[in-house]
Amino acid sequence: MKRSGTPLGARPVALRPTAPAVLVALALMTPLFARVPAALGAEAAPTPAQTPTPTGPTTTPPAAPPAAGRVKLVLAKVGGSPPFALLGGRITVRGIVAPYVAGQTVRVSFYREGRKVEVRSLNVLAGRSAGAAGQFRISFASRYPGRVEARATHYATAQQGAFSGRSPSVRFVNPNVGPGTQGQSVRLLQSELDVLHYAVPLSGSFEDATGRALIAYRKVTGLERAPAAGRRVFELLGHGAGGFHVRYPQDGRHVEADLTKQVLAEIEPGGHVRTIYTMSSGKPSTPTVIGHFQVYLKTPGVNSEDMVDSNYFIRGYAIHGYPEVPTYAASHGCLRVPIPDAAAI
Image 1 (spheres, rainbow, N blue to C red):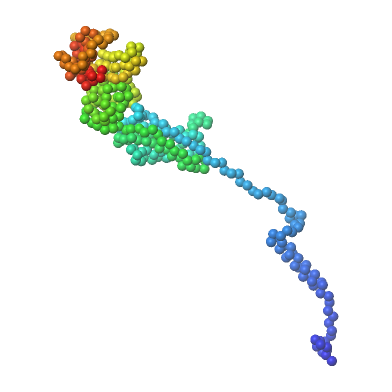
Image 2 (cartoon, helix red, strand yellow):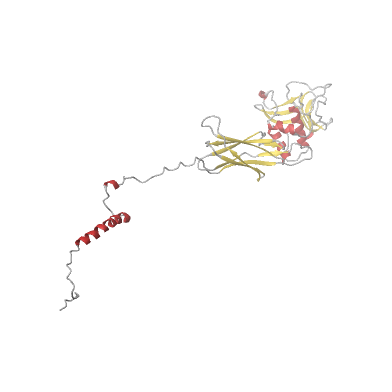
């Protein structure tokens, strides 16, 4: 008779407990389970050798902000008020940068009548003493007349912020002006003569009145007495030369005639010059009387001697207008002035 599930003639096989096999399987699987928590980030009790050293978050110190800056541009080798320069001559622009930061550059642009004509990059150099502002220099020349302005720009870097500045404008002029010419050079000439109190219009046209004022200026500065300008005239004007020296500032409102320079000046109280005119005094054979006098008579209009708007100061001697006023002493003792100036004196 067969037993269910057992082939005939086979020995029954005793089954051994399976616990050791289970234990082996668990032993082989334990390293795998031990690695899983670490990979998944689960909490596991590390061995003493694996205990990590606690560390805080790594922080980088913030970078220092770039230094703020400013620049000031100063003109040199210019003259006059407002500043001017002559064609062919060079002006200098000096830049002062504060604070000084090493390794910085600026870009300097020159504009003539608002149009950019030149650009250059310059290094900012250290000052001569510790803590001094930085500086740079640049020169510029123009072959064409017009108003010129310099602009300096520093673009932001990691060490210094952006900043910019402008120079005062300077006008380049042609110094060779004379009768019949007009334009900005003439206007500048008239403006400079006017600042020094010469009797001159501000028309921009070189007419007779400008020529008379220029002759008076040339007399005072010791130049040739001609009604035309030139480089030397503008150079002297640029340095403020050619003012009238008042000898008697305490005399109140009065007129002074310099017979050596052949000019006459109206003086206001306090010794302030009001107006300077060209004149012609007495020639050597009939010299002008020298001294302090009071005007005792004024006769407007023209008299029988062709004297215009006369101011008598002693006997028949007067300050008066006359058709001929040479650049030298040529009268009979009076002080001749140009007829257009006579009424104002």
